[in-house]
Image (cartoon, rainbow, N blue to C red; front, side, top):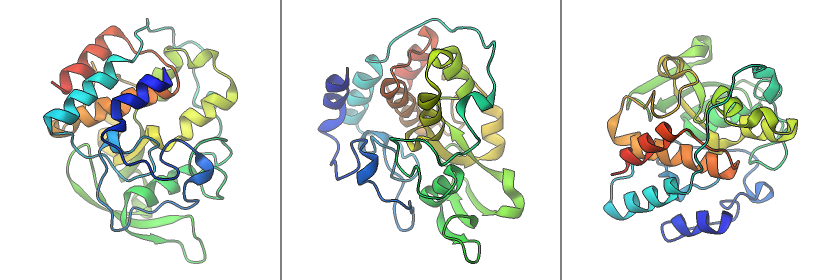
Length: 244
């Protein structure tokens, strides 16, 4: 599976140290300053900021090839699901994912990765108190301050509750912790839009911004493949449709 997954995007990626999932080779502190949003086929470990549209026919073909590899499964029960099943909220204790154990909460790592003009609390290299975000889901520019905490949220592209119903209920605690704090599965977005999404899969919810939907489907597929997690038949069909 891993070999096939790599073939699907290697022609479109320049893999530098740390971009093939080696957490030890990635920068300890993320920064989106001065960088444009990355297309997901060029961002296989999620350490580059944001989510950029996939527009060229060549990359859309590669996108469909990648999505095709995702397994289909039946959605299980939500019984037993709690956020705490995936560890402490925004824990820095995961192993084997970028930014883990760098002393900063995962949410702050992702705000720093995706934001511009990022400012930190006085005396802290972790706690983000303000930034400018170009929201990939809506295209809106959000001037965010910590006092308006919920205005920007960090979305789990594959929701935790979705993952639970598609097999995470049987994973080890460590794997669930990685899934919840892996930057590949996380993107900073409008809080209102994130709340509207909830735990939905792609057949029930897609970003309002239409030109980002193929990129969103690819990121969903990347996470599913990395964690060997199936998606529902309806969700896979919806994902492929976005990259026609």
